[in-house]
Image (tube, rainbow, N blue to C red):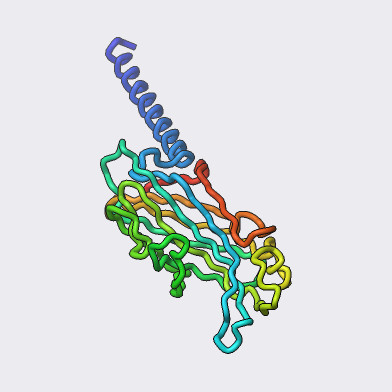
Length: 244
């Protein structure tokens, strides 16, 4: 084999080797992206705060002593601005909300905020958004009532309400909003547990959006002594955002 032929063979195998290396690198990058997700989001998850309560509400004006018990879970999702990225998120969506109940007790509803007053965000919420997309638009400040969030880092909120858990008849002893109330209904904190999964969509533009999936257990604790339990989640290693 002369030098010219050797050069052609060497060139051929060099090209094949280069091609194989390129394919292997592409596969490795794809696997890494599937495992780690997007690392440069315009907005990054900072905290998911959960406030779970037991509440008894009068069923009708004729018998104010007869109350319907519900268990509400208020979910506040806070984002912080990634100052390394110039692009801004225009819309945040919560969709594909899937809820697994421990028992058949109660009627589930998904509610939006109707107020800007803290602790009263959902006071007048009535429209059920089950099976719908919750959408929040960017602005300069958070406005839960208008479903707006601060584009440079803000908070969105929604409620998962488990209503009509049972009827409570008020006595002279009053209502104890804790595990005792649930026991009088013939249930417990464990029987009203919910496993919730939903997708967070960050839309930068029509051609750029990212999706991450969140899993929660509600309520986060049992109502042993109090009618209010809370949880703050700041570890999001399991929430992987990928470009859609």
